[in-house]
Amino acid sequence: MLQFERLLADQAFQGDLLLWLSICIESYV
Image (cartoon, rainbow, N blue to C red; front, top):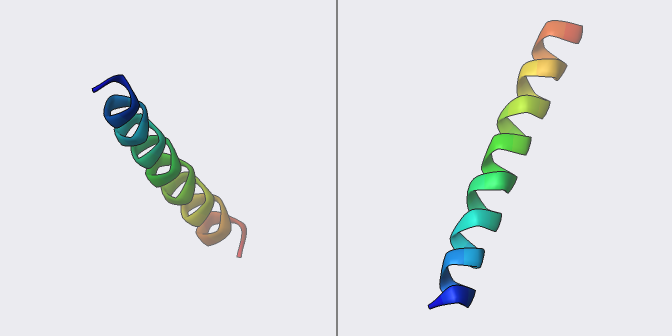
């Protein structure tokens, strides 16, 4: 169960990172 929660947390973190990167790229261009 702990591993599953960690997997979900990693997925959410990667999602936020991609969202942040896309926002930075859009505002930079």
